[in-house]
Length: 457
Image 1: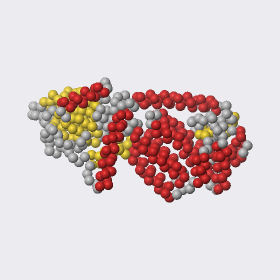
Image 2: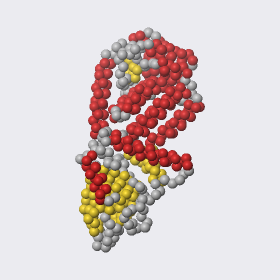
Image 3: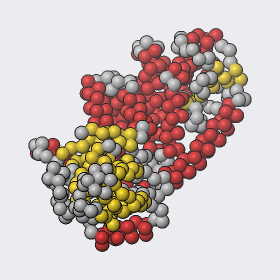
C-alpha cells in the first residue's frame, strides 16, 4: 500500500505552491499567537520537501469506503490527472539540463556577490570592548566571534559561520542599552546558525528559479527569522515588561536609520513596524498552538502521492490462457497496429530523441524468462510518461503461450498470459523504474521480437 518513489523538482512545483500558500496565509497568526518556533518549523518543512527527492506513494483500491472518503478519493484522482497534465506542460520546457544551466548561472552570480561583500567588509576595524565581550560570553558559544566597526553600513549585521563576525557602527557604541540589545540580537542569529539557513534559501532559489512562489517566500523567511530572533532575545533578557520596552525602543531607533547597503549574504538588524507590533502584543494561545499542529500534519500531505487504482478489471482483446492471471491496473491496455503506429509517429514528431528505444530479437528455452529494465527519467527530452510494448515475429512449435509482467518500482502493475502476438500501451511516470518480463510458459523454445518505446501521452 505504501511505496517510496522518486520525485523530480518539476513534480514538486504544484505542491510547493500549496505549501507556501498555507504558510503565507497563517504566518502572521503564528507569529502573534503560536509558539516561538512556529514559522521556522513550517519553513523548515518546506525546505525538507524541496531538498528531498523522494515521496511516499499510497496505493488505494477504488472500493467503497463511505460517502466522505469516496468523495475524497475521487477528488484526489481527478486532481492527480489535472496536475499531471499541467506538469507535462512545464516539463516540456523545464528539462533538467535547462534548469541546471540557469541554476549554475544564478549560483555564479551569488558567489560573485558574496566575494564582493567580503571585500567590502574587510575595511572594518576590530573592536575590543569589555561590555561587548561579556555579552558574547553569556551565550557560551564555542566559536570565536569578532566584533568590527564599519560606518559604511548604516545598520548592524552579522555574517560567517565558522568565523562569525558582527559589524557595528560607531553611534551604537555610544548607547549601552542599544549596544546590549544589538549584540544579543546578532549573537542569537549566530547561536541558532541562521546564516546557514540564509545560505540554504538562496541555494534553493538558484535551483527553483522557475518557481515564482519559492522566490516570493524568501522575503517572508527573512522577516520570520528576525521575529523569532526578537522573541528569543527578549526571553534571554528575562521577558519582563522593562526588557521588552527597552528592546522595542532600540528597534524604533534603528528603524529610523535607512540602510542603503543591503546585502543578502549577511543578517542585518533592520527593524520594521510590523516586528515591533508583534513584540508588543505577542502571547501564546491554545488556538495558535492547535492551528500549528493541524497545519503541520496537513502539510505532511505534500510528501504523499496518491494512486487510486480501479477495482474494475480491464478486459483484454486477447484470449487469456491462464485463468489465474489478471490485469492489476487500468494503466495498461492492448492496442492494435494502427494505434501503435499513430502513437509512435506523434512521439517522433515531438522530439528526435526517444527516452526508451529497446529493440531485441531473442529465443527463450522452455519455461525461461527475460527481463528488460529501464527508467523514464530524462535530463534533456520531453516529459515521457508512457511506453509501448510490441511483440512480433513470434513462433513456438507447440503454440504460443507466454506471460507479460510489468513492474513499476518493484510493484507489479500488470500480469497477463497471451496466445498470440500483442501490443501494449502503458501509462507511466517520468521518474519511475520499470521492468518488463517475458515468460515462456511452454516446454518448447519461444522466438520473439520485442520493441519498447517511450512516448508522450
